[in-house]
Image (cartoon, rainbow, N blue to C red; front, side, top):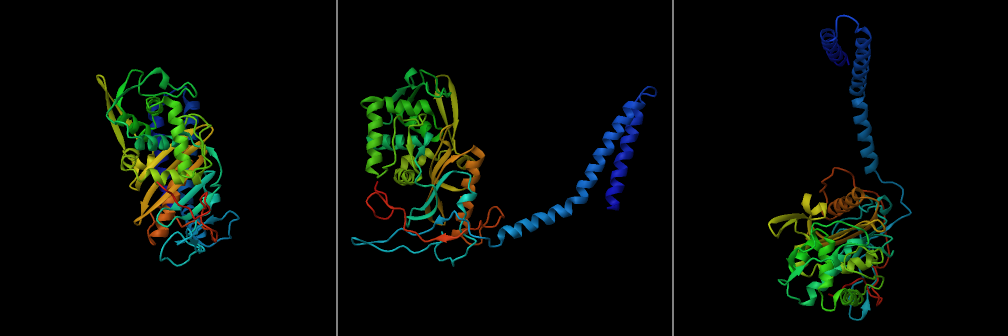
Length: 391
């Protein structure tokens, strides 16, 4: 403390010297007094902050220890049950599962869904079909640009020539939300490039152009989207257009998990959705686009497939398939209040899963969030079986 006050005195003395040199010799006493008072307050504040630093550090250590300690069970519990194993025509009963194989049960591993900002969440182990975490996962909500994942799946399965050139027209301009685009009317690009920009950069004009140039136009394309959804058992899903700008494009986390699982089986969709950036030659200029997913651009998570989404009615959304510890996991987050909340949730889930699957691994330094495993059957499919997907 003595050293800190000595430091403060030196600073104050230097300031007084400067003031005495700068201030005019006459008629400046009031100004000098005001400046001196401000400096005194600033120095005193700095000294108080330094004096309180040890107490703040100790408070942080206590908070970390408290977070790491087991706490009362939340009323909002998550499902961490493996999918019922299919044996012939029968279905085996499900056993409780922490999100890890070969890891002893530990109440510090499960994550409390109520601590997530997103209003609807689902995490599934694609390898075992186990539902690792759910929060309002049956809620039917607007899905915004996650729509484009179905747009991409329909295009990928349509067998259309991907090198065919497409021209952006006035019909592709957003009249519903008034969103902008870097694809000017008259821009020519291949179908492959349009699909790339729709999936990677969430380009609305590119997505609409894909639907418009589909045989039969947008109406036929939307019908194909809904047929595909029905084939995948996405019974809570409805599409009315190919971009996601309409809030009438709706689905649930359960249905979107099915869509992600099937889309991830298409190498082209995996590559295009996880491309960090792309440069499009348009006339005499080159237009630079980047991935709309922050985790693709700025992290080293092994993201196999992803799609983001946002309109006011949907909030911030993201659907992804990631690989952790050699296992493929599907994550769907819907209706976060802002972009920061969406990415905070996504990274919290990824860190939780990583710590659970790879004990001793922790990128953040924070304790695993508390919670408790709840026994429950795995997410049922429309046919009454355990969660499964047919691509």
